[in-house]
Each structure stands twice: as structure tokens, then as C-alpha cells.
View 1 (spheres, rainbow, N blue to C red):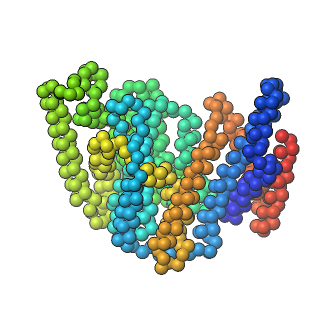
View 2: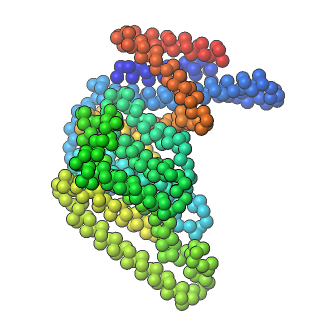
Length: 539
């Protein structure tokens, strides 16, 4: 951890040093524009000078963003290891507090109702838009944070459904993306891996914790590749819906063989498949934790894929029910041939559609309450876990159906939940160090323990602020690190390998030979100033 502290301070020093050398970013950028306007000539020397300056500014932006990451890592280390704050706070369950705060947050979110902007014509039905899925993730994550803070174990079964909903959305969202965009490039994989794993890797380096501690991250990484390989293998089949369904069915068979088939236990298929990833997925030298987490959701992503497959039919069903124009294959006329006086045949069709919608709602509600009574209310969590992977599709389907039941519900969202949903990954991962402590077993207290609610407000505010900064930095660093031309990936790896060595190697080397923290720190600063000065003069 001392090594990590020096590494991040090292980056911050680099950024400050570069800013001092250039005096003012804005002045230098203005100088570039002025030079170009005054000279007017586009000779090679001027162009090279402009390119060098632009690269220098890009490097400063990258260093600035790295310094923000480093600052929050240092803050987390101070919270968890410095002893300045009480990181052994006991979790005290209060049902009233848990429910009241959730209800209060819901009331507050109702003040932020906004309408989804339509991208197509006004007659389109919008289902599970980005606004709605971010809203969904937002309220689930808030409940999840309160569940951990107030130790609300009696809601364990419900929380498991929320975790499965994340896996469902991974399958749904990635299937829709690959189906519509047809982007199966390595760059897309890099972007997703960066989004999912950048912050966890920084935390692993900073806190010396196992990757599986943040189990949702490897879970979503794995399920992203499940969807990716469905499309990546035999990509020529992707344009044929039947062949794509066949590939999905084959993936289902593979998952069945690993987790549910008799061969799974007889031949330890799970161990065979995941042993090569043992260094990343083990907890206390065992894959038990990874097996437990994946077993609970091994079908959730497939449920999301199946829903995405039938998404167009569900959309068409709602179009028919709500009197919108029927698509081309039905007829060129609408359900209402005349807005002022619909024909008797049209009224019969409308009545039929309403009956179908009402009947569907009643059937789904009955199924939901049967699940609620016989499955969700099972008091023993271990017994509930046996049913969860196969039944969780029921509450997810019911939520989607009720959330999109009417045109008004579909076309509006709660902006507070949406904004919080964008930070789901960051709030989940950072909560282990800025909100909780000791692998989420204890609470972090900035105030005396008797002020539990005040401390909750303070810690969740700090967590949200940290998540906001880290999210922005993650997105800003994505293009400089991951963007490349398909023919130039070797150059990308060499370039960033050199940059990483330049940033980290002096520090690691010094700490290896000099055990004293402060001496190694000052020597590192000296070397970095010398290297930065050399690069600046050479440019």
C-alpha cells in the first residue's frame, strides 16, 4: 500500500509540474489558435509545432484525470487504514430507518419527473429506454446501499432479485447493442472492459484485496462475454433471427452443462472451466464464492437476451393495444380510419385489444403473487437460493410490464434515480472503502457511533461525490487509453506500456532498493521532475 500511495502521489506531482511549466492551459491553447490565424500558412513546420503542443495538452489532461483517481484512492486508504476514523462501526438493524429513508428518497425523486425525448416519430412506442434502465438501476442501487448500511438481512431475498436484475440488463442491453450496431470490434471489448474493470483494478492495487470481493464486476464481465460470444461466433448468422436463436440455445446448453447437469457434479465441469482463471476469481484459495455468485444468476443474462429477442413483438403488441398505427405488414390503414368517427369494425378491434391487455395484466399479477407468497417469503435464505435462479424472471418480467403498462408511464422517468443509476458501478465498488469497511462487514464512522443517521447522510454524500468524480474521469480516460486504429493495436500497446513504465517503474525500482518510505518518495519526485524537464525541453 505504501507503494501505491507513492505511485498516485507521483502522478499528482507530474500533473502539477506540467501545469507550472506551461503556466496556463488556456493561454497556451489561445496561443495555438492565434498562431494558426496570424500565419495562415499551413507549412510543415507550423503543423508539427501545433501537433506537439496539442499532444502536450492531451498528456496534461490525462495526468490531471489520473491525479483525480489517485486522490480518491488516497482518501479511501486514509478512511480504511489511517486510524483517523472509526472503521469498526457496528451495523445496527432498524426496519423503520431502512423503510423510511427509502420512502423519503422515493418522494424526493417524484419531484424530478421528466419526459423521455423521442428519437423517432411520435407514434413509436418506447420501451426500456436508456432513461428507464438507468432509473431502474438507480433505485435498486440506493436500496442496495441501505441494505448494507442497516444490515437489513430480512430483505435478503428481495436484494437477490435486484442483483439478478443487473445481470438481466447486461444481457438485454448488450444484445440490443450488438444486434442493432453490429459492432463486434476489439475496440468495443476494450471500451467495455475499461468501463467495468478500471476502477476495481485501481482499488485492488491500492487496497490489496481480491478481485472477487467486488463480485458484481467479474459477474458482469463474464456475462458480457457470454453475449459477445453469441454474436462473435459465426457472425454471418446474426442477420438470421432463427440462426441467432440457435446460437443462443447452444449457449443455454453450455450454461446448463456447467451449473445444472448431472455431469457438472460428476466431472466438476465448473472447476474445469474456471480453474484457468483461479488467480483472479479465488477467495481464500477457493472458487466457492465465484460458484455461489454465478449459480444464483447463471440464467439471468439469458432471460435478458430472450426478452431482447421478443422485444419487437412486445412493442407491436402495445402498439396494437393503444390504437397506434399498425406496422406495414398489417395494412396501410390505421385502427382509426377517421379520427372523428371510428368504424364499428375498428371499435370491435379496439375492444378486443383491451380485453387482451386486461387479461394479460390479470394473469401476470396472479403469477407474481404466487411467486411472492411461495418463493420470495421463504424464510430460509439457503432454501430460497435453490429456487432463485429459475424463478427470478417472474418479478423482473412483471416489473417491466407494469412499468411500461401505459404510454404515460413509458414516456416519463425519475431523473434523480437516472442520475444515481449512472453511478451504479462506482457507488457499488467504492462503498467497500468510503462507506463501509473490512469487506463490508463494518461501517465507516466519521462521527461518533451514536449519530448513526447523521453519519449515514455524511458517508453516502461522500460516496456519491467520489463516484461522480471517478465516473467522469473513467469516461475521459477511456478514449486516450483504449481508442486505436484496427491496424495499429501494437503501437497502442507499446505506447501505453511505455507511459506506464515511465510513470510507475522509477517508483517501484526505488522502493525495491530503499525501504524507507519518505526517502524513496523524495527520490522519486526528483527523478520525475528531471524526466519531465527533459521531455519539455526536447518538445
